[in-house]
Length: 388
Image (cartoon, rainbow, N blue to C red):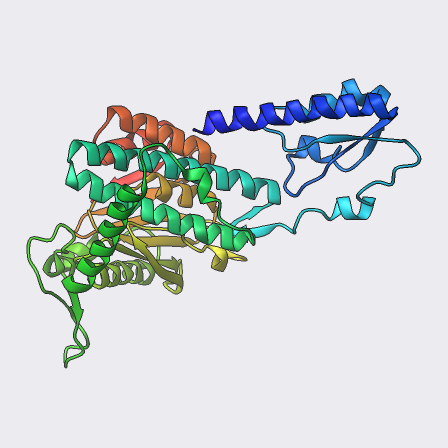
């Protein structure tokens, strides 16, 4: 669908330009003005909104507007007579100011590219929903539906931060109709109801303990084990100060107890002095983490600890979060079954986000075990990875 849309839009633009060329010849125009829009790619932004004589048509105007997937167009003018649609000041300020999201600053163009990436991910996830539904695989369909809901939440949050609107029409794929959308929506609503039914919070004399109200839950935590000294010892050695390691363990226990029996994740940011400097709740199977609190913090001085309901190793999103900020020394995933995963970049390679996702997904095609995927990436990039 995307390739067809891109080809169609480009073709329409080129046909429209041929009409403009005919009009220019009939009217005796001796120049061209290129339209302007917010978020133009940098190589096009320098030319948009400006006027050029006919002598520049084949070298500047035509190559730009015929560039694949370009949204610019050009219209004929009379040089020296036709007033430009934009002043230089308006062109200089056509884009909104950059904004920060999850510790990274985005320009208008970068925000649009990130949105397109998120939309591609959602289309791929809808494909998985279609395939699982057709195969009658309820477990896979449930997981795919929950992940799609999470992706939509992150997409909407990003658009809100960017000050723009969502473009869900770009996530359309053949086969994902209203009926299937209703089924995926029902799954996520059922999941939310299930989570609320699984865990009750009591405020008795024991200070408020989370009680499991159902057994056999895949997200249920081994609460007895995580309360032991053996479990606490798994956090030793992260920081030189034992006080900091104890606080990391305390936050891991808190996240597990809070989310036991659910697919929810919570996180905390702990500094080398054992102080919690940030934290929050990221929803089902993780979500966006706000790292703005790390502004002004020294490099390698913070640990990010969070729970993993299915007790699996790090996701690609986890690794991206770690590599995105030099402030984070180690990321810790505390499985509900008591397994603790630790990952540090150290002097290893700090990969670009796109490279992390590409490598992770390529390895997943051949390796089913996520632990082995992370282990392989750590070995290649000289990261420190521990499973305890």
